[in-house]
Image 1 (cartoon, rainbow, N blue to C red):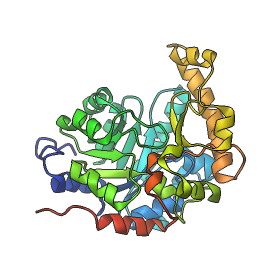
Image 2 (cartoon, helix red, strand yellow; image 1 turned 180 degrees about the vertical axis):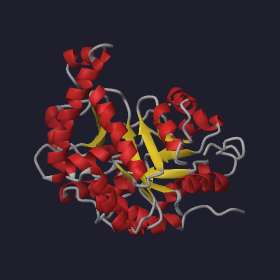
Image 3 (cartoon, rainbow, N blue to C red; image 1 turned 180 degrees about the horizontal axis):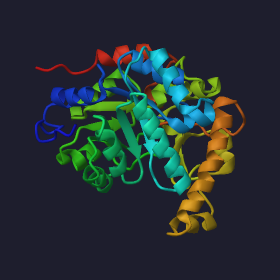
Length: 341
């Protein structure tokens, strides 16, 4: 599936860059509904794919939050979407051997169920590429700066998802333009992630040279997303200044909406936790502890409406003014794709 030598530099010609991504993903619209814990419910993933974009399955969300055995969940999404292409998110940092075994099994199941687009996060994607390329699939890799993009390229990925500083969740530190400039010479199609809430922003990033755009926050504020209604309404009401970074979810900064709960709890971890995060032998343990703690809090707040309002969101909230059908968003954004001259 690797064809970097045959195609132009991704920033050299927007239509060709877009065509490269849509060919990889098997979709009509260069628009991705990014994987979100806990918001990637089957109905949302299916709706985006059925409309011509690419919905990404977040397997921990699918199984832990929404209660589906993985294979059954993938088949349910396929039925809802009419068999439209979907993607699969693989968080591959080897925090434990048990987790890696589980992720390996999940990837194999996804491949058996016909998934051919994989998005890897953290870790070295080489072993995922070997599995996926063997059956004709493609792998894109989340990056926030050049050193991770180089690791992804050297691991054999087919494309990159560039997470910029406007993103929700684990945001990067670069602007969309700076991040693209930093990695555009690697010969891989680059998907922008972060900061887009409307069609004008979507078109601007494609014209900048990105091959596609990944959205998260905009798709939370949809009728298909099963997140708590208060979460959706908070996104609609928020401005960019209402997005803050907290270390209290995973130990590293995560972009969330400022809520009374966030203000009460604070946004910084304590000195002991900070030391544990820096330790070579302790960082995986403390990450796992924070992750499990935050998973429970996010599940309660976003799905059950509990008081622990950790609502992840990006600065794209400034351009989101309503709760809409996912298909309507895809259709509107499709009309904004720049056409070849």
